[in-house]
Image (cartoon, rainbow, N blue to C red; front, side, top):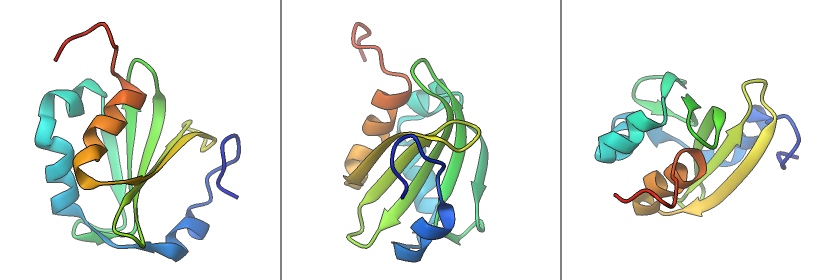
Length: 117
């Protein structure tokens, strides 16, 4: 379950993940504010403002339009699911270190190789 082409099953995923500290995650995502806003990110969703087992945002980037789900797995690494707005999994990235998260998401959502930073 929870593979490309299937509907995302949040209940199954959150059984095996750790809680995210939301202020730290938001600070990490906004560490490169230009990239963050270039994704067209909005409609943020989590269980609470402090600790949550997931974070979801809606994006409207060049390569991906839909939802981005972020989870903290048991290894303290990030798993990111890219889904349509209806919940169909389009892509999955697993075991991302914190310093890779923004770049990895940007590459899937918005990055165009011909552009320079």
